[in-house]
Length: 67
Image 1 (cartoon, one colour):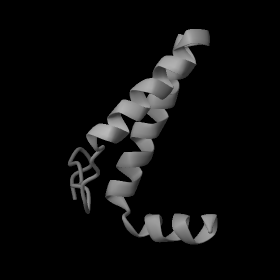
Image 2 (cartoon, one colour):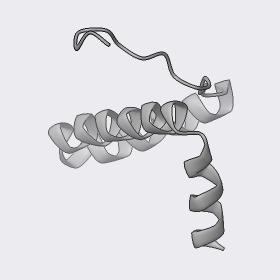
Image 3 (cartoon, one colour):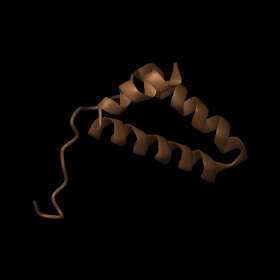
Image 4 (cartoon, rainbow, N blue to C red):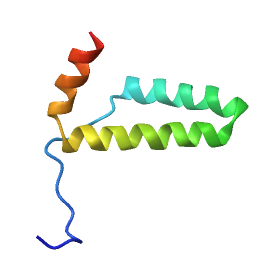
């Protein structure tokens, strides 16, 4: 397989309108003290969403280990 070819995620992740509102509030709260940390938080969260979309079986592992 060519190295520059990107694999499609196994599934899709989506943030609900309520989730988006919560994330906006979290971002604003963090940004009040440290804007760069707020940006990093959102970027790291986006990476985790991509990881879950590419590896949906991880969700079961995460739920099991968090219980």
